[in-house]
Length: 165
Image (cartoon, helix red, strand yellow):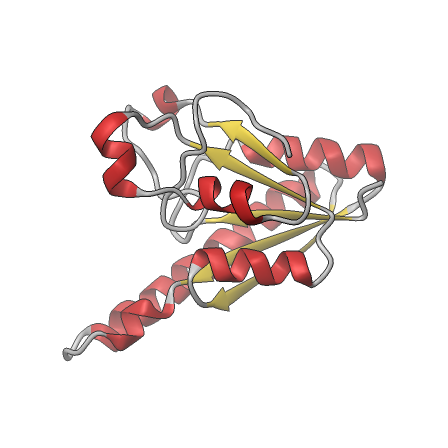
């Protein structure tokens, strides 16, 4: 049923409760987990002497994150492929779906009210536009000391519960 599982991750992110779900699906369906991180190129359009350095640090953080998640999945016995793609997170995820992903597994934060409105949601957008099922995994905010991390790629929150489409 699923041969290619897409797991988007944020550059510099740490906790991601979606990783064990992707590993479980990979084991069940003998599938490959494709770990992807978007190095958002919008920063490349900013002017200033440090813009290039910031963009490079973001790409390095994305690479480190992909390597760490790939190693974690491989340790769990999952076949993995990882890469960093320059672009806006939603565009990168849509492109990965178009390239053959059968399902997307990604975390969702449980932000409410004005924080949800102001911070936006990559996960919420993916759920709306994806042509494949999307499994959202609620993040345990207490593991992060109450802080909201930038998972999967520049912040996400698809709601209060897991959603599959």
